Length: 469
Image 1 (cartoon, rainbow, N blue to C red):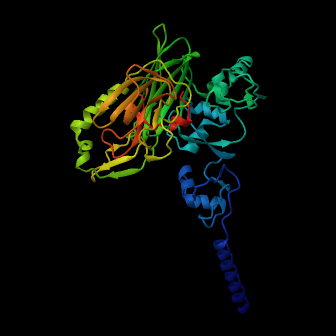
Image 2 (image 1 turned 180 degrees about the vertical axis):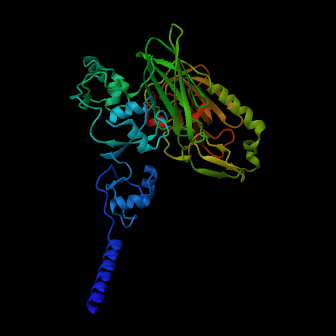
Image 3 (image 1 turned 30 degrees about the vertical axis):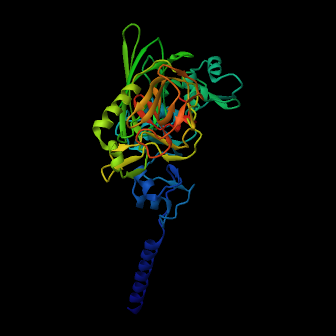
């Protein structure tokens, strides 16, 4: 009897020990499934949110005990995607791209992309959308690789029987002009393999939006290649697009448009309608994300001597006159390449886009240009070729000059001491057009420099470093 109870007690202790061991043993990491490489700024929470999985399942799949100890470059298995393998990468959707085309590009199944990105439907991609895909090494690009010589990509495309824009897309180039001498270029084995990447309806051959992530107060360039001498109309959000042909390529139509500073960050439809000479029309629409410009806020106290700044009877008519002047579209582009700074000053006293509150009121206005602190009498130069469309005194803006550069692009110069130019005068880049002063409602010598594209004020600094088109 004693031996029976002794053996039974031993068995009970063994069971308790096994249970305790199982309870304290670390969870076994999941060995298969797609992997994500941790990037700077990632947290376990943000990764779990991106893939629609729980933090607990992510910890268990990767044997993570402390979620705060993530390392940049660490590989994490993402649970819940059985049958999906490879390293997960991110690609930003471009204008005209479709889910079937991107699936072919990445060598992935469209259903897998829908699962990974939690898409509700296959046609719900928007421009600038971060698309997660498994990088398995398959799909396009494939084929032979050549090194760019001195001839352009267009010539290489012609020799290989490719569309230059399709070849650009395969090689992740912004345009056929983006390739440089010595750059490896992949030419697909099948000349048709690059064509379905966009799925554009005819007569559209290719579309490009730059930048592909527009921001408040920025300018966008839309390039459209179409066959058959089409007439093109378009609209982006609330703005009608005006297209002009590229003088060097009649199949290329270009539109420039500024995004108003107070545009709500959201998705906006981009709609294009092409009419062929025989009267047939084709439309294309895709949504584009507009992001915040993250402009600072500025509180201003206005005394009685500057009360006109708050008087709508003074400010309103002057603003409307200026907006009417800069909203006229001239179909001839006069500038080429980068704009230059209108004054040599590096001191910016007020930047573009700053939200303004006057005397404790709401932030319902903004600074529509750049204020350069500069001594009175400093020469102001034309930043690019153009035609003077206004030159004279205004109550708020003081001595004012406005230059039309064509294609809906204008620049303005406020508070000048002296104006050198007259209406109708054609000016060249670098030509002196006036002197810095403090005329109008101004507290000191400076130049207020404003730029408009498509009737909206944009950040002029972008045009010093980025050539449009």
